[in-house]
Length: 273
Figure (cartoon, rainbow, N blue to C red):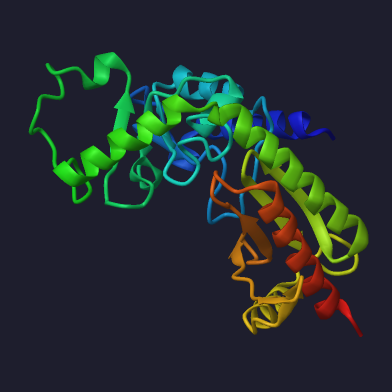
C-alpha cells in the first residue's frame, strides 16, 4: 500500500463514523454533527513530526464540509516557514477554515499568538474588537517583534532556503540510516525532520536505546576538530523513540554537517557491543 492509498483508507474509515449514532459523532435525528470543529496539526509536533500523505487533507476536508465541520489548523510548531511554507498546511493543497499560530511569530522573544479565519467568520461584524481576550493576545512589545519577524521574512526567500537546507539535512540522516540498523523511518519536510530509533529490525520502537543515547549525548565528550561537544536530543512520538530535529532556519551547511557528525558518533558509541 502506498502512502497515498493509506491516507485514503484513513479518511474512508473516518467517514464511516458518520454512518451511525453509535460513534457519537453524528446525530441522525437532528441531522447535525455533534462537533463544531476538527482540530489538527498538519504535521504532528510532539507526536514525532509525522508527515501525512499529500492527499490526506484534501479528502478529509471534503468529509468535514459535507457535515458542516470546520477544519481548524494548529500551526504553533510548524508555522512561519518551519516546513518551507509560511504555514505547513500549504503543502497539502487545502484551505482550512481557521488557523491558529504563535511562538515563531515573535521568534520566541515575546509571547504572542494569533488567529486567521475565513472572512465570514472573523469580520468586524461577527468578531468585533474586544470580543475576546487571551494570555498571549496583542501587546506592544510582542506586536513590534512580530512585525519585525514578518519584515525579515519579506526580505529573503525563506521558502527556497529552508527547503534546500532541509533536503541537505535529510540526505545526511538517510546516510546515517544506511550505516546504523537501529534507525528506522527517516523523514522530513523543510527543517522539520525525524529519525526513529528502533530495534535491529528497523521497526520495533526502542525507547531504552533512546534513553541511553540521551544520557550519553549529555556527557559533553563528543569530539570534532579537537573541540568537545554535547547533544541535547528532542524526543517525540507515541513510543518516545523519535528524534525530532527543528534547527534554526538560519542554520548553515557547516552546522548541519557538525550535527550529523555528532549524531553519528553518538550512534556508533551506543551501538558498540
